[in-house]
Structure formats: structure tokens, C-alpha cells
Length: 174
Length: 155
Image 1 (cartoon, chains in turn yellow, red):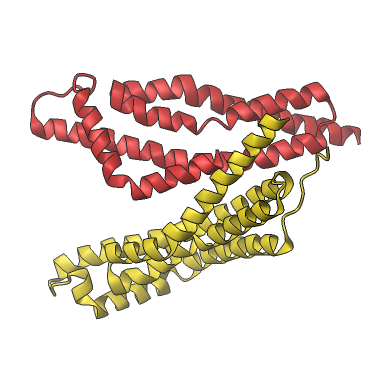
Image 2 (cartoon, chains in turn orange, purple):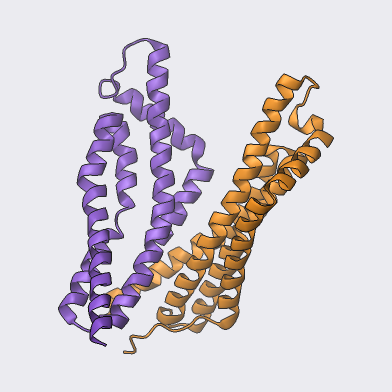
């Protein structure tokens, strides 16, 4: 038996590397353009007062805006964190799949699900941060959940359990 | 460990309300362990703190399981590739493998807080799970670093 890890397809490595690059750039941009991003989000929120329940009383509105801006910042941070992590998860898990999944179709399906799910999931945080100024915290979260987190996160979880099952099967067959 | 971490993250997000409800019910069922006084204001604060600890435990489990799954994957690959001595390799696999179970301590942390009270639960998880498994991971990583240093001096 060959004990070396097998490389996943090159497009998978490319997706993982690009995702990590996006995470790095996202983290750097968060720091470099912090003031500009906050100013943009605040401006967009003030342009949609009904969405955020702004009443025109400074004391009340400032508290609401502050809370939304904290969530906006948190969503950007979570994008940075998850994109870094999922890039590595894609590399590690598709390497395991490329090495241990024998049947070609299941190997390809697992690798595709892991890559698409893993690369898509962090984008949900980016979408959420963009949606917060226009749709509010909770509605923005619900949209990101249904459009990105549930389908892409679901794909990753299904693929990981599938892969875990295959690894257990390989251990039993030894 | 990675799949458990991912699933834990999904439970945290999609099952937030049922988890909070279950945690609050377990706190109520173990009122004595949580030192309930009968004063609703005080008891509510104690319950909120315990439920928050459970959520923190789940959150730590999610992040640590993802991270340690990857650390185990990459470190054990280095052990397989760069440690030539069979016994040293086996010892490092055992230490790293045990250490990678560290995140399970946070699940124990969450359940123990509810069943034994906040302080006793945290103490149990820290002393019996998190400290020994975390130490195993640290020992494995130090062992690997020492082995690599020895090899590079000989090369």
C-alpha cells in the first residue's frame, strides 16, 4: 500500500489558495479601510432609517447605529476568520478524500462538495455585512443564512460525514 | 474532529433557541447545584450566566475542533515524513491523537456546568479533560520539535 498523500485536483488547490488570499486581503482591508467602511455603513444606514427603526432622536438612534456597526464589523471579522480556516479545511479534507476514497464518483462528489461548500460558506459573512446597512441585522442574517450558510455549510457537513464514513470503512476493512 | 466541529457550528447557529431552552431546563432541574435562592432576580442572573457558559463551551468546541483537526492532520503528516524512529513516531502519534481530543473537553464543560453548577462544572472539565488532553498536545508538539531539531543537527 502506498502511504503517501495524494494531491487533490489542481482546481481545488487553486480555490483553497484564492480563498486564503481573499481572507488575508479581507483582514488587511478591515484594518486599512476601517474608517471608510464604518463611514459607508453608517451613511447607508442613515439612508434607510425605517429598516433600523431610527426615530430621529440622537440618543436613541446612536445606540441603534452603534449596535448595527458592531455587527457589521463582526461579520467582516467572521469572513476573515472563516475564509482562512475553510481554505485549510478544504486542503486537508480533499487530500484525505483524494487518498482514501477509492470509488471515482464518490471521490469526485466529496471533493466537489467540500470545495464548493467550503469556499462558498465564508462569503455568507461578507454578504451579511453588506446587507446589514440595507436590511438590518436580523433580516440580513436570515437572507445570508438561506442563500449561503445553509446550502454551502450543509454541503460541507454532508461531505465531511460522508468522508468520515469512508475512512471508518477503510479502517474496518484493513 | 473537523466534522464534529462543523456540526457543532451548525447546531450553535440553527439550534440556538432549543439549546438555550434545554440549558435553562437543565439549570432549573439542578437548582441546588446552581445555588438558587428563590429570589427570581438572583436566580435569573445565575441561569443566564450558566446558559451563557454553555454557549461559550459550544463556541469554543466549534473553533478548537476545526483548528485541532487541522493541526493533527498537518503535524501527523510531518511525523510520518520526518521522524525516522518507529517508537518515537508511535509515541508522537499517541500524544498528538490524544491532544486532538482536547475540544471534547468543551462539550463536557457545557454539560458539566448545567449538571454540577458553573464553578464545579468548569473545574471538572479543566482538571479532568482540558488540562490532560491539552498537555498531551503540547508534549507531542514539543517532542516533534525536539525530534526535528535533533535530525537537523545530525544532517
